[in-house]
Structure formats: C-alpha cells, structure tokens
Image (cartoon, rainbow, N blue to C red; front, side, top):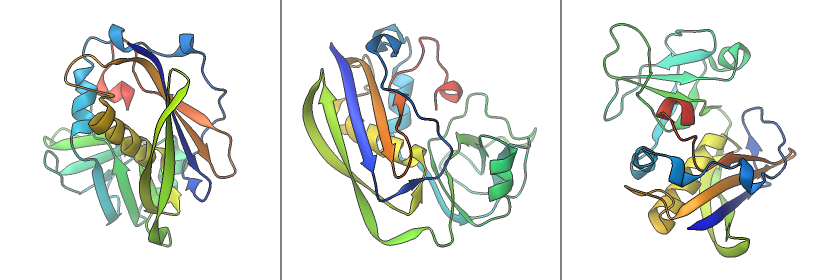
Length: 220
C-alpha cells in the first residue's frame, strides 16, 4: 500500500468560517492506518452520495445550547440538526438566513422523541446574505503520494466565507471517485491527510482515516 497520501488545499482568496487552530504537519506515526479500520466501507458510503445542501434557511429550534435544528428535507430526513463548536457560534447563526453544506450522519443523531426522519451534521453553516460570489472561485488542490506530487485538480465554491466541511467534502469526493481513496472494501492507501491553508490564518489538517473503532458521529 501507499503509505502517505497528502493533499494541499490553498484558498488565499477566501476566508474559513469557523475558528481553527494552527497545526504543524503530522508525522506519519500520528496518522491513523486504514488497514486497522474494520468498517472502512462506511466512510465510502458517506462520500458516494451527495452532501447535505440547503440555502437561505432559518433555524426553528434547539436541543442544546450549541446546536440548531432546521425544518429542511432530504432523501432520508425531514429535520436536520447541526452541532456547532459552542453556544456563541450557535447564537451567531440562530434565527438568521443561512446556507448549510455538510455530510449527514444518523448513528447517535438525536433531535427529539418524535423525530423519526432526522439527520445530523457538524458545523457546515454560513451566513446567506452577502456571502455569495457572482463567479464561483476555483481552488487548486495538489496531491502528493509518498512525497511525490502526482496530480492537481480544481474544486469550486460560490461563497466568500466557506466552511472547512465544504472544501473537505469536495476534495474527498473527487479523490474517492477518481483515486479510490475510499472504496466498498479496503483502501489502497494506508495513511493520508488533507492540509488547508486559508487566507490570513495558519494551516491545519484532517486525517483521512479514523480510529480503528469509529462511528460516523465521531468521525465527521
């Protein structure tokens, strides 16, 4: 298997919407190994389908102080809860017209006793008003495998302030469709990570693979 699968996403003309903390590049020993994950195909199913996307919607309820609930529908849900970093961020978006972009999970997703068709996401919220670009912004993604740059491709966003969730999904979706990052079985990559370099902020990264005993709710 290829050992290190590294992806660099530089978006100098855009701003990341949530607070993130600068991170040094990981040592390979820090990264989770795909061969130790028993149910890796569950990640493949997350990126095989379409993301959760809703525009110009307002929250209707809260379960906890750091989440927001929306009356929006998708193929498998009629209510959507987003869990935000803290109460301050939830207050910022509460009762505001927002756009939502994320990957839903259902395991351990709890809204209320009567919410049978419900889904949850983490973050993924941006203000709707004044946050759209007339022409979508192209973001160059550079991919290195075992220290050798092997390809580059573009992703697009129509937002001035964009979430890491949106960019992360689009990169992983492309790599799953074109480079078999995730498959309905073992991955051909043993380790990997995605590094973001946002405008006016320090870089940060996400591991491509979860801990061995993962659930969707812990991973996303």
